Amino acid sequence: MGPRLVGRDPETAILTVEAMCVLAEEICAQGPVALFLDDLQWADRASVLVLQRLVQSVAQLPLLIVGALRPVPRVVEVDVLVRGLRGTHRTVLRLGPLAASAVPLLVAHTIGHEPGPRLLRLCENPYDVRNSGRADTRCGPVPSFCIGMPLRPGRLPEAGAVAAAARRAAAELGDATALAYALHVLAAKHFLEAPGLEALELARQASRLTPETIHPAQWLGLQLALANCYMELDLTPDAERTLASVRPSAEDLGGVFLPWYHLSCALLAFHAGRWEDAIAEVDAGLDPGVHFAMSRALRALAGAIAVHQGRRDDAETHMSRAAAAQDSGTVSWFYEYVLLCAQALLDEAQGHSERAFRRLAHSFDTGIGHLPGQLILSFLTPDLVRLALDQGDSAAARRYAHAARSRAAHSSAPYHLGDACRCEGLIAQDPLLEAARHYREATRPLNQAHALTEAAELHAIRGRPSDGRAHLERALAIYAGLGAVWDAARATARLRAVSVSRGTRGPRNTARLGWEALTSTERIIAGHVAAGHSNPETAARMCISRRTVSTHVSNILRKLGLTSRVELATEVIRRNSPPEHQQP
Image 1 (cartoon, rainbow, N blue to C red):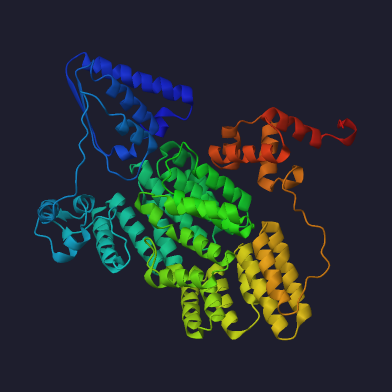
Image 2: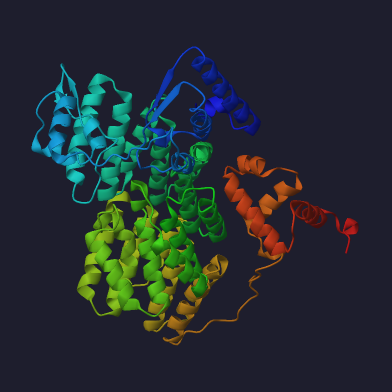
């Protein structure tokens, strides 16, 4: 029972669930029935509702229900169902790992011949084993699995070799599903080793080849991974379109996919400088109705924004909660870098620059989560170069700069080019205006402001304080637009140390309450409320999630000191009325 069958209308969903239960009772009236359900971790909400009703009826019907599920991905509705299995008519069996001696037997049974040592090394769990190969009389026993591919640091060459073989076999057999998975794994391998257009094209091919028969959850995972590829390569419109297209499926399926979707939206908004939108996505991803499968990264991003905005206490609270969270699932491990960056940023805010450097340097060399380090972690290099130079370690700084340039050479993405120019400029004591230009093209305002600050400092050191002051003013204007209070204060202090002070300050909007405090997104949503649109209607019109809209509405009411949507609609209408019709 999928989203297309049930529909998104609550009344239709309830009627469909009721009809399914009535049908089950009619079948049971004809004789005993055994219902076997596999892969319950992929179940949609309507199917879980039907199953809950049937489980409650097993004592009254000649009905046997047998269900199996894996521990990940975690779906909150399925978790609730499993926890509720208590009583004399219900039994829960928890299976341990497959015995090591049984793995070769299962692989041999699957592929039709004795497995070699390389294939056995790849089959570390039963899921990998069952998907590890298909024997075909035309092409021989060629591994054609990809969904369980172990993309782990140190194992990428093996994964790539098996995926390449799978790609060839799937193409020859005309197996579109296997071909899509093979391309997806190859794309992930290329992206982890050297993010660039080659990896992106493989991911696009996988997305295009994915057949209609693939499970919605697997399709959703492919699309979210593709959106993050677009984001890394500064293809923002493509990332936005992809995220907008998966929003309905993420809301329908829930589980790990909904917080993954919100985290992707939050990162996109953060990089673009829309920090309040990013916070709204974080809050939506941490909604009590969502299983917190990505809570470490979500809370870490909120903590990083709090540091930038000068809210140290809030940042420390977010970071302590992020560190204490224990997310399950493979996907969350690809976002451990968010927590790393936030922790290093907080280290610096607390005056522990050496600790920040050690933290970043260790992860860059050894990897973090499922990211192997070096090229894929080259976004750390500007901070690593800056901190290494502060400590007099020019050799390390040159090594990090080389990594940044290598990544830029692979991708040619403006963001990556900006990092490379910034690293090289810091080492050569050369003004960083080229880096600032690349960051502006990439729509990364925070990075642009950092490059302008460093350019201002270098101009001042070279005896050109007026140029330094001009670049400082540009940086401070960007920081002000972001609300980056801490960064602005740090930039001002650094330039004061080289005898550059701010010019005449113009008026700045620092309002935290009232209409002037609303972001552009919040003003649009306020207009929808005034037009009588519900949260789901507004979400559909703006291509964002219902939870995100709800978070924005709560923020709008708080900023305006209002208590209801009616009051908000009244205020919007009053402000939009001609002056002669406005009441004082």
